[in-house]
Image (tube, rainbow, N blue to C red; front, side, top):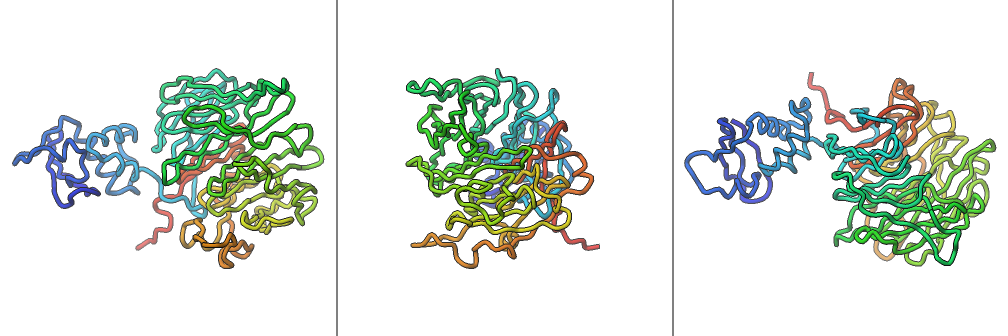
Length: 478
């Protein structure tokens, strides 16, 4: 006989179920409405289902860190809906909070056909949409079960984001338009084009990057879809698209594209709490790296801060060491970059951006090979940096202790309290992978979703899933 506690409702009332001839005792508040409201009876309520499935569900809920269930996660989650245990089971199957200092390679997702990734789109629930091969998209559920694969009309998808509950937004650097598909049905829903009837150069614009969409706010308001478009004449801008009507609503930061400082941004980050949009562009060649970072006011469309390297506005004290990649930590309200020559990581406070706002941190011996080819990604208030010899994570000591990157609420001032100001002494780094992991190849893409980090490598099939183990930090009693 199995039992499980639930949450909500009147606790302490035990309901007896006869599932396929096996008796189970469950707290009534944990059951679905149809089962919990069943009329009282001295005999258990009969449910004509497989008892082995319910036993596996209860075992997974009781002991999340135990061995993998005997049944596929998708089968158990579908069955759990019947008993009202879906939320509890999904939480049990999900990894613990992502802590970069204790993550490890948990699994590898490899589509059945054309398994070389071209774009990654994780979501806050830990699910993943993966573009691969010739215009294919595969969706993995929050339990990382394969749910759907379909082929789009594009030859190669280079940008991809989820639009819950079942839509995906995608674009290609070789074909015009921003396209929306239903990934569960494999159906094309809509296409968005950027064009200007007053300027014949603005037509057939392709999508270079799509911003990850933050969760809806407390009032349930969804942020717009932000995508960078580039026309064949290199004219470019960031276009805001309404997530409900799928219609363009605003142009932000229109540029000619005639020079490096006006090239199409390859990364866009929406900062809804500040009403800002961050965009960056990086190029590399025989003479090294060059690029820019800009902040636009999403309401007015005006640039409020920018930095160009090497030289230019907001120049760095590290002249001759331009950034190889940059990202924004939305919770910390900070910009991070990795330098191309030294490989150092730098942070700038969004609350006090000036002419040279950067604080620099240097890696240990393993990260001394420079930053050429490095990628940087902010997730869960941690900074992940790919290097030639591995995957490095940076974290602030205060956030390691409290496992949060949220800033304290301040009244009447935009200044960060002295205890929260960025200082190189408050950061620590380590390499989360082994040397054997690093030998698999250079990291090509890196995206975080929920409590997972998804990684793809150059010319390597599939996507690596990095998680914190349930046993991380466990103390041996032997």
